[in-house]
Image (cartoon, rainbow, N blue to C red; front, side, top):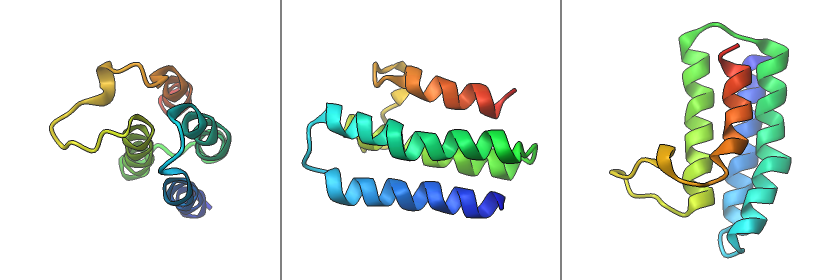
Length: 98
């Protein structure tokens, strides 16, 4: 079930990236919160895996979505200091590390 939820979150993010790449940032943020973040929240609360590989996979999906929302794909940039409503991502991380 864990892998199914990871795959669903990744596929939802890919769908969002494909279809909303030319939309305003606010629209992309709303789509992220309603589609991707809800799936990630559900997967962390239902499965609650303590394996490092599962947590890493979800963090990778989360990081990819932050790069998409910020439209910053530079490999040297760090999104941890940005104002991407990274607060939205904090709710996900709170579930992940509880």
